[in-house]
Image (cartoon, rainbow, N blue to C red):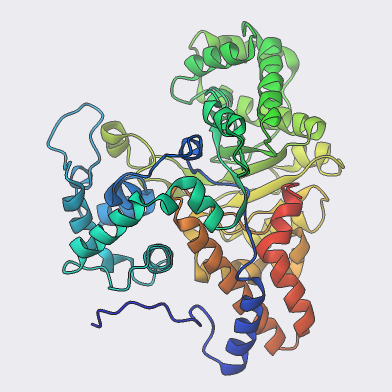
Length: 474
């Protein structure tokens, strides 16, 4: 296996020569456009201070990335050996970042032909200038090279933000937590556009861990004494206004099932009171969640926050792992999702509203052509989010275009978002999306579906324009 590591300039393009040439032309027209990042999970605290750093290579690449942890765990590698401590503090945990990195490098081959492998290769080669393939033998030399880069002034978070040409970066922020980092960014005078996103799952989901504690914190942040349902709605409106004052353009909601529907006011008020007393049953939680999605849609129609709905993930499928280590370690598994009936109450109420946008995401690819594309092809408020999570890949992007564009058209899509916690993966993910988009459009040109000038316009829309429009980031 050769030691030199260079990324082919025509990677991810189809093998047929005409399509490949057209794809390269389309890609070159969009490769250097700025990055619009309307949904993700990057920590805003990285940008709150101008002299902040990312830490060591193991912390930067491995311990905080659930994609990497998931693959290594699937091969029987204990999370403790990757530097993840159990919640109860028991057992021996690897603390040496070089040993964690060595273990990661020895298993880097596991990511071959996966999107994670493509992202990591881009990050190491294009961002960090590594040109020796990562493996057991090169591990420590690569560690030293990455560590040296991370310590350099040009690799501070704000400098990388600018080097990546990020036009806007939206984070995900719980409704019950302070926005101190965003306030510090705003007060610093730095010109980077880092915006909060209103993520209220912690206060909407009656089954969420510490829901009552989250309600207390929400009250403290808004100055509202949340003793009843009316005060709860008042606090949510106030908290949304606080997010909007710091530049928020969207809310984000994660559900297993996209159920929506109004409850009678007296009934929902009684359910809320029972929840405050700690008396929650599963049926109440489902009905209350569906009702609150209606409330959130109504508020979005008023204040203009774009509403994102991520449906179809069973969180913490590996319950013993969750109990021992906590969440976000790669144990979330897709579910089938039904949208047509579940969303009908919400769309009948707000699907035609001129100030309402609903962006839908799913982990159930079978819903793309059957339900999501027809919904987006009818309701003015609906836009389709890009392939999410397990389908944010070369094959997943192509399948997505094949299933939705013929029915919904390109301009009912919401473009691309990187949806990542790993900051250096942002340009890698956008590059893969742009290459996959160029390749798919080139195929449409090759088969005579599109003219070249049409494909060129559509490539720009997929790279930047659709996201800016859908999220009102113009």
